[in-house]
Image 1: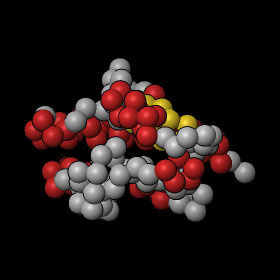
Image 2 (image 1 turned 90 degrees about the vertical axis):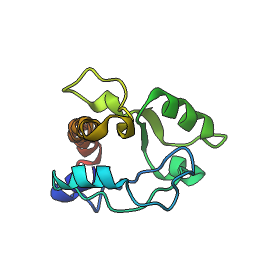
Image 3 (image 1 turned 45 degrees about the horizontal axis):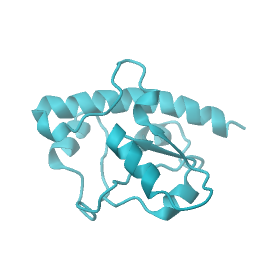
Image 4 (image 1 turned 180 degrees about the vertical axis):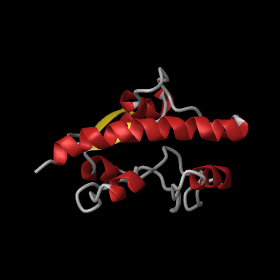
Length: 137
């Protein structure tokens, strides 16, 4: 998503981040296989893993989840009280597939990473259009 936002000149208006529901990989760089597959599409996956935190619910307008288990976990992890973030499945934005979840690529070999990237590119394009309409002047 970040590369699309930058390409459209919207980096000053749209902030994107990524976080997991568990702290197991906190501080780690992206998986080397995903990094390589994304690099083949000219997508930079730099950064390091972190766990979602209470500030995320207050700082972001939307929190997207990759699967149903993450959706439940993210909603259960939300701080008490009101928060502006809308929590919803990422696949709500995928238009070129009937997938309802982004599968875990780690068990699908090289094809698994390509499948995930296909879903992410599709959904991110639709998500960008949705967000662009929200930040329009």
